Length: 281
Image 1 (spheres, rainbow, N blue to C red):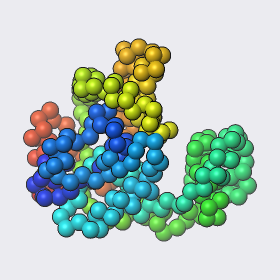
Image 2 (image 1 turned 90 degrees about the vertical axis):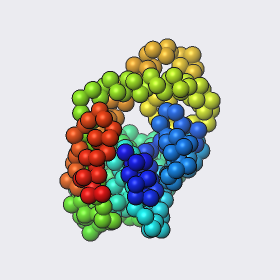
Image 3 (image 1 turned 180 degrees about the vertical axis):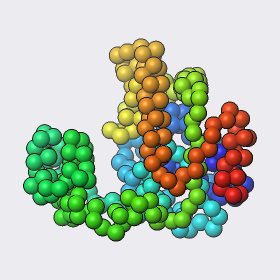
Image 4 (image 1 turned 180 degrees about the horizontal axis):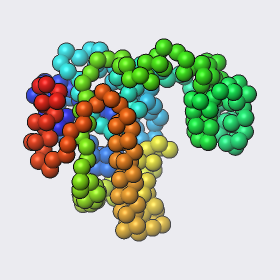
């Protein structure tokens, strides 16, 4: 759909898929084909090697650079809700302190919670205190710029994010998966296996960084490559993980009142025409 709209509008596509940024992870992330990329310029694809760090802040910087320099419409497509909002909304990403983060990662969740509550007694109103990743990030941000979660939540930008007031004006459609999602996910993953996904995982395995190694499909097939499990078990887990991600993405995007939802139809032409009407193209 994004490809067709981009061709009609002479626009460019900004991918907000969190794993398509990694080079060599082609089959398992369902990257656009060579032909599609020759017809339409795609951004945020093949940006870094799979062992290199890449953050949402990086996606925000690149995506906004594309939009600010674009003459024709920029079409944002993909599945990572935070990356989408990072580009279109006034989300702020403070700097990082790897040394401090490493120190914090050695602490228990209880110790992290105590440390955060010492500097911000109201932190529970803004972050999940049972989530160690959130606690670590909150304490890292405090160490970098001295702002607590409560202070960050009180900024005008944070208020705008909560109210879905965008950094850029935009129109958006979401495609509801409708019935038959599981069957389509199964067919999609089996198609990836037939296209050589296992060989791709084996080839790239030595170069996968911590984030890239968590990609659905790659994570499940890595033990197969290592001879530690069967491909049948990995296939079942990858399909289940894909369905879980799809459900989480739907829940995340459904919260956004700016997205107009389109009813599913098996005919891609019908889906495209519904998007055209909604977007007034």
